[in-house]
Image (cartoon, rainbow, N blue to C red; front, top):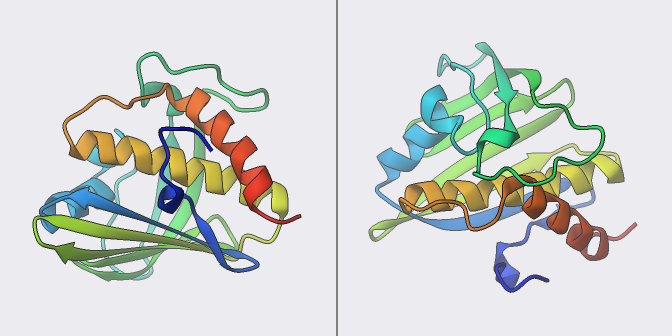
Length: 178
């Protein structure tokens, strides 16, 4: 475990194919919601893509992870400069719940709960059936949420994105059973 990551910052498997991560973020809840739902804000920590916030609405996410930090770090082999994925809104209840498909089989839920002037964000990624994908997703969400926390705190990410992701993937290889 690196010094920059508290033990509770790590994702946990709540069942064999479900990963859950939580972060206590600077509020208010409406600001965090905007970073989840508005393409121009979401691209600063995760991926761009306009969303129509209604169940059944299709959308596309486009990642450019090299733009999330300066410098971007060393991109791992097999990862391009850009990646896109088609998704569909499953459920939405502003400003507290957003659920969408992740590719064809998986699903991601974001739940926001105010806690004073902060917001507890819970990310639940369901139906990740392959260990290699689970390791990539675990490291990815962890690194992306670290960037989100930095952005909401009006700071630069502490570690180049790709370097953080690569280090976290090694850590999740040890944390998640084979």
